[in-house]
Length: 517
Image 1 (cartoon, rainbow, N blue to C red):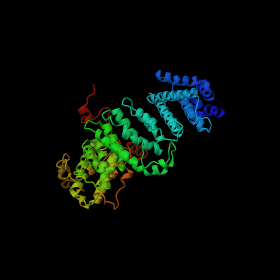
Image 2: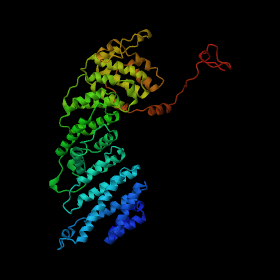
Image 3: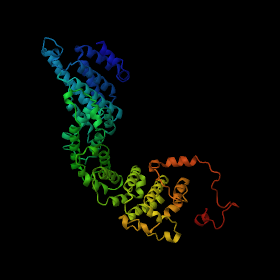
Image 4: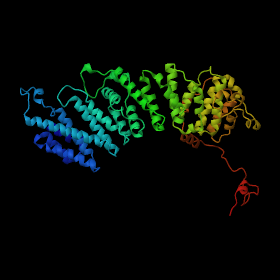
């Protein structure tokens, strides 16, 4: 058994993590069945560490190595002699009891490893999941009954059930499942189990469960390329090749079950995560995407990031499935509020708005309302967002030549009587065509030169080619700050009036509003 000793003792990871005592006990047990009590000691050690919140990594790694070796040696198999080609096809009663005892210890160890997934320490939770998955792979190659290789669905079911806790968030641990979802069999059986067993009696009302469930779905990539590559965790006979069509049916069933759990009391964080997964994972595989219409329309009225994500889903259905939505432009128009500048999805809103307003056949009054609303928002927008808005307005003016009449600089009396109605929810009734872009004129005196320079486009002939919004969509305030401080100026702003005495002038505003005591 020198090979076994080397496998346990020489691996750098194992050498660093497993204590010498556990390593010696494992080696003795694997080399001598009479040392079976050593296995009990290792299992008890892990159980004690779990109960007392002591380090569990050594115990996890020891049991992982021990049971992986036992599975490879087919020590669980009662018909091992027959498998080895020996004339004797039955084992003694003692050996049969020993195999049954090994299975009991294996089940005890798997239960402890699953319990370890709930560890408060993330690295211990991740290691517990890793050990469970490695043993799952070994059991798939070397089944306990000695039969042909088969995927251990029950093991995977128990692992997923532990990850989908209603009491503890496992988001970071679930993300490490990505190391195994590159295997098509893991992806296929995960979707199958999610369809049949893991969502029947659960709802999205439990925030912890919902976030765990949605994070799990997010880690399950599905593509035809994945099935064509056919990389598997457990080798199976060629006749058992997984099919994309079957997995697609599972995905549709899981999504339909999810939609039955969706209610008006769903939390915003869950609602947002659900839409992200729909856009990034589910939508391309749905058989009847038209059934999303009601869900997306209701989400569009939610407000904030939820509405924006719903808008992207609507755009996909309009573009790829020829589905029409009523009042889609009114919904888009209502999303441009000052609050949008403080969400991480604002770049997505500008991107989608640019696509929705790309047609040159849209009514002029509709586009003019968007231009005026954007111009009004540019006054209160952060500098980096003001630059985006200015370029966006410029592109809209290029697409619709009739809107050039908005380019003028009204005097102060005209500004106070701006006919544009910002509060009007229907863009065509906002009187935008009767107004002007005085807001952009005002931005030409912005404190930041980058914003002031961008606003000066209105005083020059518009270029023939549109500005590329992608180059400015991801600009951050730190970028503008670094850009400004790197500039060198020949003149610097100074006080308007140089002080001629110790005290300020009598008519100074400071003295009018403040007094020194």
